[in-house]
Length: 585
Image (cartoon, rainbow, N blue to C red; front, side, top):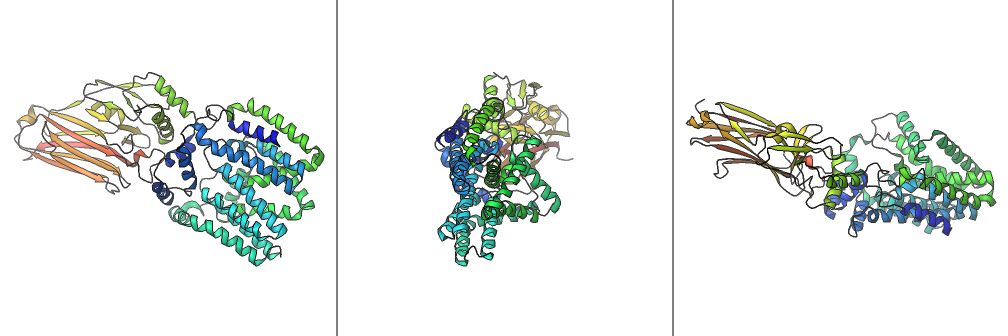
């Protein structure tokens, strides 16, 4: 067993720091940097899951923010899951079968991958297996202690991820079936239920807000469609690699193992079947219709691997199982460190190479003076790494000034070549009446802005200008120079129309105007949440002026519960239009 644990630890620790954090992991790390109250508030108002895993990640983040440090607790739970599989296999099948089950868990692709990522699924696997083991003991021996321990083991899955609701509900149905069949007393069922209710009470506010907020979470698809989706995710759960023949073989082995259990240990067969079927039936009955991946069914993996282990035991006999375990370990170890290296241990094996891109950006000697922001799924991971590698982060702390005749522009993380934009930092107002519009299109705004700091254009779904760093006010100033016609006009009316969006509390959008070097003559301020999308400023001017300056300011509040995934676009500038006409017109 020590050899199996050593291989399990080695496979999970080897090159742990090499794969870049991918978006889901960085999202956890970003949320974990928020204050505790904000994390809880965010889980109530924005997230799909309770706050426990973010709070655990926050505690780990106090030690360090490197990939290895953030992922290490999941490695510990991954190895602990291998050890617990050995204990469960010994008790549920045989001494030798325990070794094989531990070896199977060691090499199971999803378990290996998720033991190396900053996500809660290795923890969910461990406690799901623990809860199943205690529940089987409870139904076999009828001891109240096991019912209570099974219920307590279901707390972490529920408080870490709302898939835990399926696990707890399935276990509850199993206890009710056992009571109906005379295998559980009413008192033990009550103890189990009351213990489970403690976790439900803690999760209830978050569950209530989730189902209130996400009305489309169920009922949008038919029963047949949801059932097919569940079957597809089960096939993917069997192995991460898309090998149809391998998946078919593992499915057949699982079924063969369950049939064997039905013959030799009917209670274990029926308990594991209920554990497997009841949550899936609940998904179909609810017509679950939102985001769904195979790792969301991680709580089913223990019984699938248990069935597979028993299937092998039936094929080769109990005596050969230790040798099977050794052969499996040797073959699996060879596969993972050779052909599997690219998919588990390379820099981009976790769906992204953001660290490498950030390092390349810093080391490229880029001549870019400004960065146009890509979509947040690319930007957020890059900024996560750049914030650690450089202070100030060049993608945030970008500046343009009147001295910049040309803007060198780059879009980080996309591979697009840099390009140049010729600038006119002082915009002439030559005629009267005068009209001019500035949009957030990079070629338009960056060509005409006089000064810009801590703002960036983001032309993704629409062309917008956003703040680049939460908690810091960014600004853009546009300077208009009066021509002879405006200088000669005795009295002028200046109107500045502007479009914006400011949907969340704590954010700020402001517009101010001034003539020449005088104090600011007019100002507009929007403090979120603001349902308006446009407004205007009017200035009447009798004295001549040489220059008019329009200043935009955007502040994204980093304490907002919605501040995740670099949601900087929650406050945005769209465009503005300036009109100048003689007052008597």
